[in-house]
Amino acid sequence: MSDLPRKAVTRTVKLAALPLGFAGRATWGLGKRIGGRSAELVARELQQRTAEQLFKVLGELKGGAMKFGQALSVFESALPEEVAGPYRAALTKLQDAAPPMPTRTVHTVLEERLGAEWRELFLEFEDKPAAAASIGQVHRAVWHDGREVAVKVQYPGAGEALLSDLTQLSRFARLLGPLIPGMDIKPLIAEMRDRVSEELDYALEAEAQRIHAEEFADDPDVVVPAVVHQSEQILVTEWMDGVPLAEVIADGTEAQRDRAGQLLARFLFSGPARTGLLHADPHPGNFRLLPGGEDEGPEGWRLGVLDFGTVDRLPGGLPETIGTCLRMTVAGEAETVYELLCAEGFVKESVALDPDAVLEYLLPIIEPAEAEAFAFTRGWMRTQAARIADPRSPAHQLGKQLNLPPAYLLIHRVTLSTIGVLCQLNATVRLRDELVEWLPGFEDPEAVRGLSGGSGPGAP
Image (cartoon, rainbow, N blue to C red; front, side):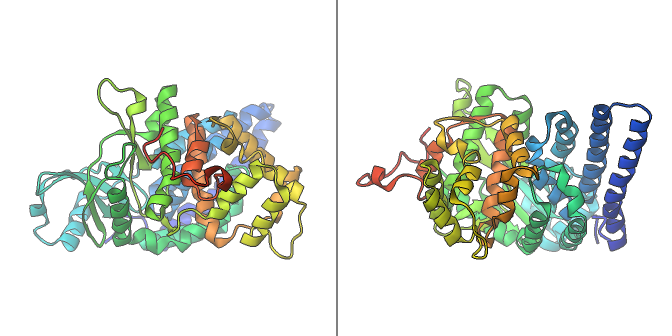
């Protein structure tokens, strides 16, 4: 029983066609240039055709292919503006939409996991899915006690499809690299493969969501739906309405985008400190904005958070080294920063770098941590990506010599992804406030000595 096109030959043929398509379009582009078409026009058409093929295939296959596409979607703000449009449109479609399972398959899974009388658990159940994602789809329903709920049903064969897709994608990761300047695609795919079993385990997801729901139950800024029921391949949580973050990105006012960005940054840094867990899938499809009362503007909005299938377990919160290194970088302490990076494994013992050059490499990246309020824009993201991606630049040469320790892999990806979303929002965010409040080591110990603490999770 399966509705993922998961037979090895079928899925491999679809994915293997991608690099052939890239080559074919390059030949087509060369022909157009010889025929007198402008380089700019040809490049734009090539990018559009590439986006259409790539994300059509990823979306159709679901599984690891779609998961990979969703991970890429938060980085579209790094693309040059003249080619970002087609990617933005294609990537956005992946964020919370995919071809649904047939109704008969959904009913079969529900019967297998909840019993033959599964309908008695619900007062209502909508067969048409409300959302579809990489390994499962969500149905709106009413639980037997009257609560509106979201019923997540895992695609049969999802595990096999995830591993097959990610293995195939890794074989031509180099061809996919140019999609996102400055980003190494292969480690991203490898990290996804390593977390397949966790992604498929709804018991782990339910546990992570319960922890967050309990911790943020009375929070004025963040809402996490309570878990109602969990069994293998089935997860039932309270339903949450709200404005999808993707809509705020596309059509939100400046005040709405700023509020959404502030809440997203607050959740990223407060979550590990308060729960010991880092939500590790921060693409726009996993967030909703919940407006306050009729008389309240965006300042009354709250952030609704969905999908806890991938988390990083950080019992002590985010590592203090991150905060200390950020603080020392802002202070211009090159030697101290270099020593910290060496001690944590960011610089291997066999590599010797100039501490001043390392500081110069880091300063533009940590600019948002210095400012009282920082305007995250696509232009800023593109500048950083180009600086690191350009093989001729000192930043590129130095970056190649740095190492990313395994313990920091997920933290690094989540941080980059969140910055990507903030740039999509074009949000002005008081990031420094959140770092002072929630990131261990960031606040100067001398400045806080003798103080009893910060301003709390509801502070603006």
